[in-house]
Length: 115
Length: 111
Image (cartoon, rainbow over the protein chains, first blue to last red):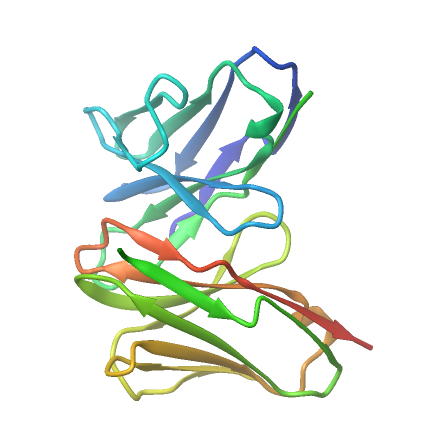
Protein backbone atom coordinates (compact mmCIF):
# COMPACT_ATOMS: atom_id res chain seq x y z
CA UNK A 1 0.00 0.00 0.00
CA UNK A 2 0.99 3.63 -0.47
CA UNK A 3 1.17 6.23 2.29
CA UNK A 4 0.13 9.66 1.14
CA UNK A 5 0.80 12.93 2.91
CA UNK A 6 -1.48 15.73 1.82
CA UNK A 7 -1.08 19.28 3.06
CA UNK A 8 -2.66 21.45 4.27
CA UNK A 9 -5.45 19.48 5.92
CA UNK A 10 -7.67 22.54 5.98
CA UNK A 11 -7.57 26.22 5.18
CA UNK A 12 -9.79 29.26 5.16
CA UNK A 13 -8.96 31.62 2.32
CA UNK A 14 -10.09 34.99 1.06
CA UNK A 15 -11.82 35.14 -2.30
CA UNK A 16 -9.51 36.10 -5.14
CA UNK A 17 -6.48 34.42 -3.59
CA UNK A 18 -4.86 31.09 -4.52
CA UNK A 19 -4.05 27.99 -2.50
CA UNK A 20 -1.56 25.27 -3.37
CA UNK A 21 -2.17 21.76 -2.04
CA UNK A 22 0.68 19.29 -1.86
CA UNK A 23 0.58 15.52 -2.18
CA UNK A 24 3.63 13.43 -1.27
CA UNK A 25 3.70 9.64 -1.67
CA UNK A 26 6.14 7.32 0.06
CA UNK A 27 6.72 5.23 -3.07
CA UNK A 28 6.74 5.64 -6.81
CA UNK A 29 3.27 5.39 -8.27
CA UNK A 30 2.00 5.20 -11.79
CA UNK A 31 -1.11 7.35 -11.59
CA UNK A 32 -1.90 10.41 -9.50
CA UNK A 33 -5.30 12.04 -9.53
CA UNK A 34 -6.89 15.11 -8.01
CA UNK A 35 -10.54 15.03 -6.96
CA UNK A 36 -12.99 17.57 -5.62
CA UNK A 37 -15.83 16.70 -3.31
CA UNK A 38 -18.33 19.46 -2.81
CA UNK A 39 -20.59 19.37 0.26
CA UNK A 40 -22.96 16.43 0.06
CA UNK A 41 -21.58 15.29 -3.27
CA UNK A 42 -19.44 12.43 -4.49
CA UNK A 43 -15.90 12.64 -5.79
CA UNK A 44 -15.42 14.48 -9.05
CA UNK A 45 -12.19 13.96 -10.94
CA UNK A 46 -10.44 17.24 -11.68
CA UNK A 47 -7.43 15.92 -13.54
CA UNK A 48 -4.80 13.25 -13.88
CA UNK A 49 -1.36 14.53 -12.91
CA UNK A 50 1.20 13.39 -15.48
CA UNK A 51 4.84 13.18 -14.54
CA UNK A 52 6.91 15.67 -16.49
CA UNK A 53 4.08 16.91 -18.68
CA UNK A 54 0.83 18.83 -18.55
CA UNK A 55 -2.02 17.32 -16.56
CA UNK A 56 -5.04 15.80 -18.30
CA UNK A 57 -8.14 17.74 -17.26
CA UNK A 58 -11.71 16.49 -17.15
CA UNK A 59 -14.56 18.33 -18.75
CA UNK A 60 -15.39 21.45 -16.79
CA UNK A 61 -11.92 21.93 -15.33
CA UNK A 62 -9.20 24.09 -16.88
CA UNK A 63 -5.52 24.58 -16.29
CA UNK A 64 -5.82 28.30 -15.58
CA UNK A 65 -8.11 27.63 -12.64
CA UNK A 66 -6.49 24.42 -11.38
CA UNK A 67 -2.83 24.32 -12.38
CA UNK A 68 -1.21 21.02 -11.49
CA UNK A 69 2.43 20.05 -11.27
CA UNK A 70 4.03 16.63 -11.02
CA UNK A 71 7.78 16.99 -11.18
CA UNK A 72 8.48 13.36 -10.25
CA UNK A 73 6.74 10.06 -9.52
CA UNK A 74 6.10 10.76 -5.83
CA UNK A 75 4.98 14.40 -5.64
CA UNK A 76 2.22 16.59 -7.07
CA UNK A 77 0.61 19.92 -6.35
CA UNK A 78 -2.82 21.32 -7.14
CA UNK A 79 -3.40 25.05 -7.06
CA UNK A 80 -6.88 26.49 -6.75
CA UNK A 81 -6.58 29.91 -8.35
CA UNK A 82 -8.59 33.10 -7.97
CA UNK A 83 -10.85 31.42 -5.47
CA UNK A 84 -14.54 32.08 -4.98
CA UNK A 85 -16.94 30.66 -2.36
CA UNK A 86 -18.01 28.05 -4.94
CA UNK A 87 -14.54 26.50 -4.65
CA UNK A 88 -15.22 25.55 -1.03
CA UNK A 89 -14.81 21.79 -1.09
CA UNK A 90 -12.71 18.90 0.03
CA UNK A 91 -9.82 18.30 -2.34
CA UNK A 92 -8.34 14.81 -2.45
CA UNK A 93 -5.16 13.45 -3.90
CA UNK A 94 -5.32 9.83 -5.03
CA UNK A 95 -2.70 7.44 -6.33
CA UNK A 96 -2.62 4.05 -7.97
CA UNK A 97 0.35 1.85 -7.24
CA UNK A 98 2.56 0.08 -9.68
CA UNK A 99 1.20 -3.41 -9.07
CA UNK A 100 -1.44 -5.30 -11.02
CA UNK A 101 -5.03 -4.82 -9.90
CA UNK A 102 -4.20 -2.33 -7.21
CA UNK A 103 -6.76 -0.05 -5.65
CA UNK A 104 -6.61 3.72 -5.43
CA UNK A 105 -5.23 5.19 -2.22
CA UNK A 106 -6.26 8.58 -0.92
CA UNK A 107 -4.56 11.37 0.92
CA UNK A 108 -6.17 12.75 4.05
CA UNK A 109 -7.88 15.48 2.07
CA UNK A 110 -7.84 19.27 2.24
CA UNK A 111 -10.96 21.01 3.46
CA UNK A 112 -11.03 24.42 1.79
CA UNK A 113 -13.36 27.20 2.83
CA UNK A 114 -13.41 30.39 0.77
CA UNK A 115 -14.86 33.47 2.44
CA UNK B 1 -21.62 8.23 -21.38
CA UNK B 2 -19.85 6.39 -18.58
CA UNK B 3 -21.71 6.44 -15.30
CA UNK B 4 -21.96 4.81 -11.91
CA UNK B 5 -25.23 4.91 -9.97
CA UNK B 6 -25.61 4.03 -6.32
CA UNK B 7 -28.77 3.36 -4.40
CA UNK B 8 -30.22 4.21 -2.03
CA UNK B 9 -28.74 7.67 -1.61
CA UNK B 10 -29.27 7.47 2.13
CA UNK B 11 -30.35 4.87 4.61
CA UNK B 12 -31.20 4.90 8.31
CA UNK B 13 -31.15 1.60 10.21
CA UNK B 14 -30.81 0.41 13.78
CA UNK B 15 -27.93 -1.53 15.24
CA UNK B 16 -28.14 -5.20 14.38
CA UNK B 17 -29.94 -4.66 11.09
CA UNK B 18 -28.56 -5.99 7.80
CA UNK B 19 -28.18 -3.57 4.90
CA UNK B 20 -27.58 -4.00 1.18
CA UNK B 21 -26.08 -1.18 -0.84
CA UNK B 22 -26.33 -1.18 -4.61
CA UNK B 23 -23.99 0.01 -7.34
CA UNK B 24 -24.73 -0.21 -11.05
CA UNK B 25 -22.32 0.87 -13.74
CA UNK B 26 -22.03 1.58 -17.42
CA UNK B 27 -18.36 2.03 -18.16
CA UNK B 28 -16.50 1.30 -21.35
CA UNK B 29 -13.37 -0.82 -20.96
CA UNK B 30 -14.40 -1.86 -17.45
CA UNK B 31 -11.81 -3.68 -15.36
CA UNK B 32 -12.80 -3.64 -11.70
CA UNK B 33 -15.21 -2.24 -9.19
CA UNK B 34 -14.05 -0.83 -5.89
CA UNK B 35 -15.90 -0.11 -2.67
CA UNK B 36 -14.77 2.55 -0.21
CA UNK B 37 -15.95 3.79 3.17
CA UNK B 38 -15.73 7.52 3.80
CA UNK B 39 -16.14 8.70 7.38
CA UNK B 40 -14.38 12.06 7.40
CA UNK B 41 -12.37 13.16 4.39
CA UNK B 42 -10.29 10.34 2.97
CA UNK B 43 -12.10 7.24 1.63
CA UNK B 44 -10.71 3.97 2.93
CA UNK B 45 -10.57 0.90 0.74
CA UNK B 46 -12.95 -2.00 1.38
CA UNK B 47 -13.04 -4.32 -1.63
CA UNK B 48 -11.85 -4.73 -5.18
CA UNK B 49 -14.03 -6.92 -7.41
CA UNK B 50 -12.75 -8.05 -10.76
CA UNK B 51 -14.38 -11.42 -11.35
CA UNK B 52 -18.10 -11.99 -11.58
CA UNK B 53 -19.87 -14.11 -8.97
CA UNK B 54 -17.03 -14.38 -6.47
CA UNK B 55 -17.97 -13.02 -3.08
CA UNK B 56 -15.40 -11.13 -1.08
CA UNK B 57 -15.76 -10.97 2.69
CA UNK B 58 -14.21 -9.00 5.49
CA UNK B 59 -15.81 -9.52 8.85
CA UNK B 60 -19.41 -8.37 8.66
CA UNK B 61 -18.96 -6.88 5.21
CA UNK B 62 -19.26 -8.76 1.95
CA UNK B 63 -19.53 -7.80 -1.68
CA UNK B 64 -20.13 -9.41 -5.04
CA UNK B 65 -19.99 -8.34 -8.67
CA UNK B 66 -22.28 -9.29 -11.55
CA UNK B 67 -20.56 -8.38 -14.80
CA UNK B 68 -23.46 -9.58 -16.89
CA UNK B 69 -26.02 -7.33 -15.23
CA UNK B 70 -23.41 -4.64 -14.52
CA UNK B 71 -23.93 -4.19 -10.81
CA UNK B 72 -22.41 -4.88 -7.45
CA UNK B 73 -23.81 -5.07 -3.93
CA UNK B 74 -22.23 -4.41 -0.57
CA UNK B 75 -23.78 -6.20 2.38
CA UNK B 76 -23.26 -5.27 6.00
CA UNK B 77 -24.66 -7.65 8.60
CA UNK B 78 -25.26 -6.91 12.29
CA UNK B 79 -24.67 -3.22 11.71
CA UNK B 80 -23.00 -1.10 14.38
CA UNK B 81 -22.95 2.65 14.93
CA UNK B 82 -19.35 2.63 13.70
CA UNK B 83 -20.61 1.58 10.29
CA UNK B 84 -22.20 5.00 9.86
CA UNK B 85 -20.44 6.55 6.88
CA UNK B 86 -20.75 7.27 3.19
CA UNK B 87 -20.10 4.19 1.08
CA UNK B 88 -18.70 4.86 -2.37
CA UNK B 89 -18.31 2.53 -5.30
CA UNK B 90 -16.00 3.23 -8.21
CA UNK B 91 -15.73 1.60 -11.63
CA UNK B 92 -12.18 1.34 -12.91
CA UNK B 93 -11.04 1.57 -16.49
CA UNK B 94 -9.07 -1.32 -17.92
CA UNK B 95 -5.68 0.37 -17.68
CA UNK B 96 -6.40 2.04 -14.34
CA UNK B 97 -6.23 5.50 -15.82
CA UNK B 98 -9.68 6.49 -14.62
CA UNK B 99 -11.93 5.80 -11.67
CA UNK B 100 -15.61 6.74 -11.91
CA UNK B 101 -17.23 7.25 -8.52
CA UNK B 102 -20.90 6.91 -7.75
CA UNK B 103 -22.75 9.48 -5.68
CA UNK B 104 -22.41 7.39 -2.57
CA UNK B 105 -24.84 5.93 -0.06
CA UNK B 106 -25.00 7.68 3.29
CA UNK B 107 -25.62 5.09 5.97
CA UNK B 108 -26.73 6.12 9.44
CA UNK B 109 -26.84 3.36 12.04
CA UNK B 110 -28.76 4.35 15.15
CA UNK B 111 -28.19 2.74 18.56
